[in-house]
Length: 268
Ligand SMILES: [Mn+2]
Image (cartoon, rainbow, N blue to C red; front, side, top):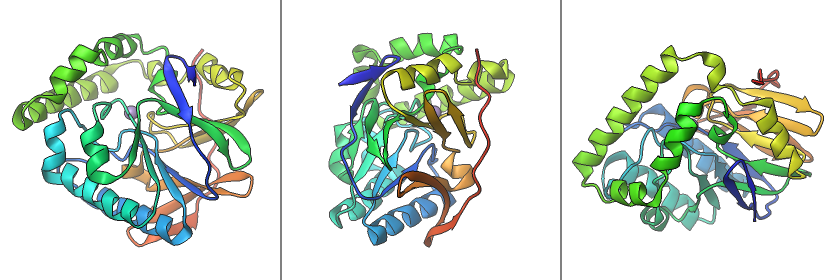
């Protein structure tokens, strides 16, 4: 197992076709994003494709009690139907749902990855991560990440009763919104050094989400893709031959191809 900027990279395995989506931020109230996720799962079953979700499936997931109630139970049930029908689904931890644990895997049949993936995908050695580790200039976040993901903090949070968990999550989201809306926006960009670090592992393609900015670019070491937030754009990537192709999904399934986006500004 290798790593990237502190994120462990696990073997991605192989499949003929893979769908990639990221940052669904499914809220407690559900809504259109859940219908569109249903479309992704329907299309995956039709195409015998596996589905990779590159983190932040949920707007927040704190305690294991959540899987027994509300939208968290409903989404787990949708995944369970898909995985029972033979669709492979892999979830990476995002910064909002890194406490997703074995209870969710058991209820849904998905594989939960506490880190990133690396493997041969559409003809290239590819690294898939959520993307928060690439935003190296966001020092307050990177510092908070260290204690938030400490085993003691995690254990405490995961055992909170439901109401306390939801209150903690609501406070964390409100604080994050304040920080993101007032901070120097360059702080929230991936750094060029972080993207280069991905290619320094030997991979030739990097795919991530997190920054909610649909982009595709080339660097000396390879190409990178940034998935947009699925709850805003309903756009994902599909493997086709030796390429990743951006496509739109809706509740009915796979929609039309989407034009190639431009590159993302990278911070120094
Ligand atoms: Mn994120």
